[in-house]
Length: 294
Ligand SMILES: CC(C)(COP(=O)(O)OP(=O)(O)OC[C@H]1O[C@@H](n2cnc3c(N)ncnc32)[C@H](O)[C@@H]1OP(=O)(O)O)[C@@H](O)C(=O)NCCC(=O)NCCS
Image 1: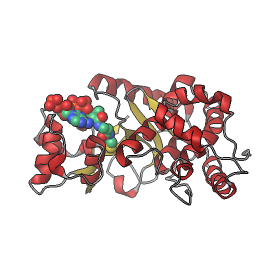
Image 2 (image 1 turned 90 degrees about the horizontal axis):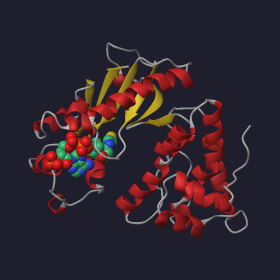
Image 3 (image 1 turned 90 degrees about the vertical axis):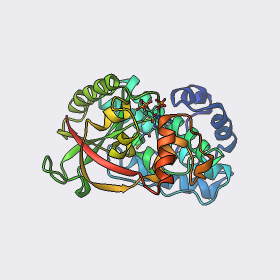
Image 4 (image 1 turned 45 degrees about the horizontal axis):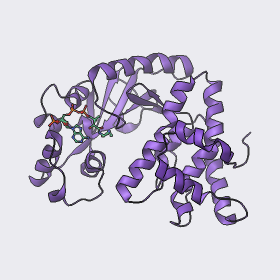
């Protein structure tokens, strides 16, 4: 049973904003756009619908997009943030039922704040313009375990290699932007994932972790030192398939820009220079998929 769409009590907001790592600027805009069924009856119905779509799939991990807002008013821009704020109580209950520690629970959910920051950086104003990624967090299917995030998933046709079969349970690996990707932190994180999922989700034993990222593009190693963190991270994985165009993702993840003029991009680091030199040479980056045995 799910309860209806209900936002947290406003007196709890400072504590919730802290836990979810939400910036001052987003806090102010969220407070200002705070909806009510009386003042925003149509949007309220849409919020209820999106909320229901999310929480009726609690524990699910298939890709999910939520029905969105009708406009780009402040309430429209923060529409999904309100859906996730309403789902906070549901996912916290799910985490508790699965015996997941508060530390892991809040570390995981604080990706909401990070994504709000990223949206502002990318689009110039505050909000949360896509829903898909955070449905993993707020359905209890992704967890931040040390440096990396891992989500429950099923192997899809595009991942199939000799090592595993389509449909078998696996873990997806994600790399949040939170400091260097040291091999020690990755080792520790992968070790945590092994025991965490075996303990809290014993119904889906997993043998492999799968990552799809520009970080796995072997072309990166043509520019960076062999002992660079990114190159060492890539070496953990066995690549499958040819991947797909990754130019937009590289630009988004490294420069936080959408369709930038490449002549105006900063050129401070080896990676920044590599990305631009590669594109100037008419070449393209690729998102590649790879797996590692758990
Ligand atoms: C993945 C990430 C943590 C790696 O950072 P790292 O551990 O510092 O990487 P490396 O040590 O291998 O860096 C090698 C070089 O690239 C530079 N570099 C790495 N990531 C960079 C970034 N995001 N922006 C600018 N330069 C970067 C480093 O400064 C270094 O260059 P230098 O020797 O001239 O200083 C970082 O790139 C990042 O936060 N990316 C955004 C998140 C992301 O892309 N996730 C994957 C999504 S699919």
